[in-house]
Image 1 (cartoon, rainbow, N blue to C red):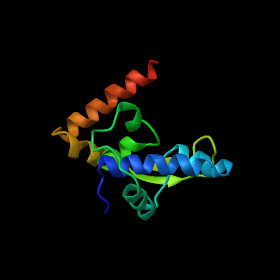
Image 2: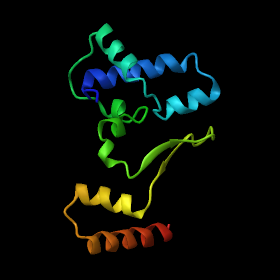
Image 3: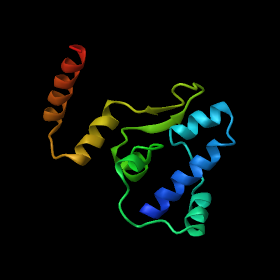
Image 4: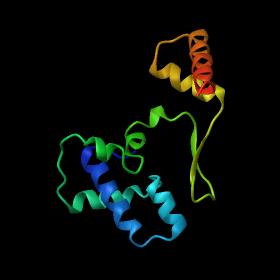
Length: 127
């Protein structure tokens, strides 16, 4: 597993920006959604340039799915690449995966989680 440091994440952002300049339409759609798994290339990029060690800015965290790279435990399923240019990445999972992910983050009981889920579903349906 790679070290998820500010240097690593900034190198990843730079590398994705570089790859976007030569990418095909589908590759660009994937890159814009942060789909880039070449950890060795990112680590080489991190060694080739001095990056600040300061925490990432809000903009950096929100660019190319960086926040989820930093917090993979927040993803409720498995990232899957699709053939859609508009939605090239989807998360596949089921209710049990969602509940397990939430339970890891909070100390809610299963009944409390299901009640929250129903409450949120009602709020969404009222939109």
